Image (cartoon, rainbow, N blue to C red; front, side, top):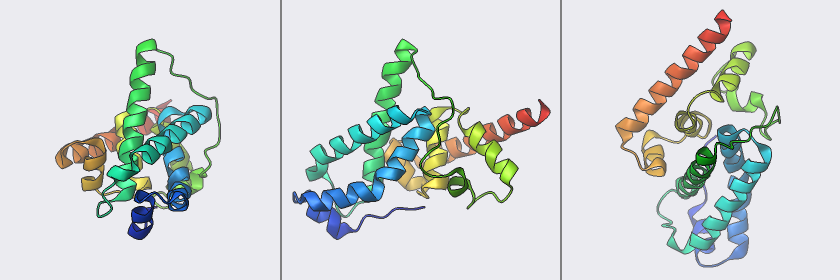
Length: 184
């Protein structure tokens, strides 16, 4: 589900219009929250990271280049926010994880576009939580938020070929985890 922000709304928000900024938040808030939830597996932390991201967006809205992709710009801020969070908690080894909290976007909605088989869809979603956060991030951006390799490259500040490699490795990791779970 590719989300495109109207450049006119972005320009108006950049000029200081709070209602235009609110429209951007309403348009992207759920996608940013789900992105975080898939990365940290904790509802409260995903909510906090989402709020922190939009505070950063608000504080830096004047630096937004409207001719650029607003969604990619916001996901860049979101990715940097979650990277900082991982650095902070990875050092303390206090990564909290929820038991089983439903994501606001249903599992059906996340994977039905790509996977018809219900069992396989469930396996992919369970396995997604087991791969490296960076791999999970590129898969989410590419398949669920329909960002191009170039857009992901800009968000993660990586060369396009590296992004392609990470997507390939992420898919391979998912396949190995799903195959392993079939054996067990």
